[in-house]
Image (cartoon, rainbow, N blue to C red; front, side, top):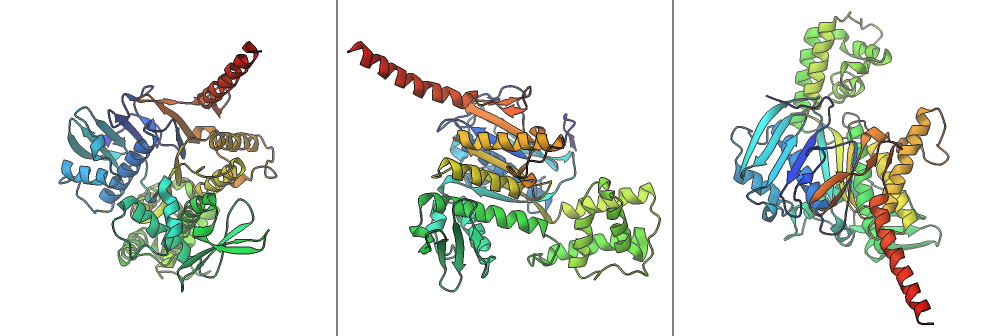
Amino acid sequence: MFLTPYNDDMARIRIKHFGPIGEGFVEDEFIPLHKITVFIGPQGAGKSAVAKVISTFLWLEKAFSRGDYSPETFTTEEFKTCLSYHSLVSYLSADTELVYWGKAFHLAYTNGVFTCVASVSAPYRMPKISYIPAERNFCSAVPMSASLTGLLRSLFDLLSDFDASRLALGEKGFKLPFGSYEYRYDSKSRTSFIQDSQWNCVVELHQAASGIQSALPLLLVSDYFSKLTIGTFDNRRQTLSLNERNIIKQKYTELIATMGTGIVATLAGLVAQGGASIGFSLVGLLSAFVSAGLYKGVRDTESVPELTERDKEKIARIGDELFASITSCFVNIVEEPEQNLFPNAQRDVMHYLMECTNRSPENQLVITTHSPYILETLNNCIYAGELMNKGIATDSIIPCNQHILFEKVGAYAIDNGEICSIKDHEIQQIDANFLDACSVKINSDYENLSNLEFQNL
């Protein structure tokens, strides 16, 4: 077992000498993966490479946790196959260091060899991981993914997620967070439509503006999976596999042995008493049992047994094991959410991504961006969260479901092979100087042109 040297429960990653990344994160070597993690930098600096390595390690940790692979027999060549999913194998060199400290496993590729060790860290939650690439516009032109061949696997998986998201709409529409647009999907004709209520017109999705074509797959997939993991154990989700249901029943049987037949009433009582400090979502555990048909509801005749601290520890252990086995959170990795969008729409999309991320305390959002408007919007969400903590209502400007605390945000600039934090801890904001330098250069060009004009008068 591997014990991380950090006191918090965040996963961390170290990337060195990998493609355009040279020395990597120069401040602490390991980049913490916060609830919100943002990477900014010029084209070709390595933002997407970092995001894809994060995606790869998160997926591997999930695969090891659910038993898809054995950590003891997993080979270096198999790891390279995983990297090929995002076309990253060519980025490897003799000096490459890729190290991941996760909640369940410590994974590393160093000296050309992959290693995996179980980790002693915070309770692990099984995530749904979505990687939403910049090429997502392609989704808007494709009726369904089932008949396609020859695509990159990452893009094909996005198409599959997009299919699941739009099929789940049924007869309902999906209102985009900007403009007066609503998306509808006709499953019979496999046709996507955009309706503009302002101009009272309807067009097929592939005929809509490029910004809409880019934003819709991102927004719909983010909305669907962030809601799906909230409803993992309720009637909204009908996708629990037989294996997942058997796991739930197994954990239920273990709890019955500890708590007797008053299990549901006991859990309900603990929830009412604020018992979430036990270490996992009691509400989720309760609804898991209900979803498996083990209980229809709490009966008044059920007695509530007195639990010892040892009993509570056992409940916590069983709950942690359950949530490590059933998909119960959403990790959303997004390239360039601003793509093809006017600044106001960039703001609205970022606000919606914040809302999706905040639907569960375990959800995470990783973003790569070139846009100052994305960072400025995130700064406003941080500021709103700070004001809310002071008792100042901000809902008329930024709703509370879009707030985020400064300490739950990581922001990094990538340039010339190095990664550095751009958080200003003094003012509790993301430092915009990295982007301001670009504005200074543009303004300098204007001043130089102006000087030329006056010199020739």
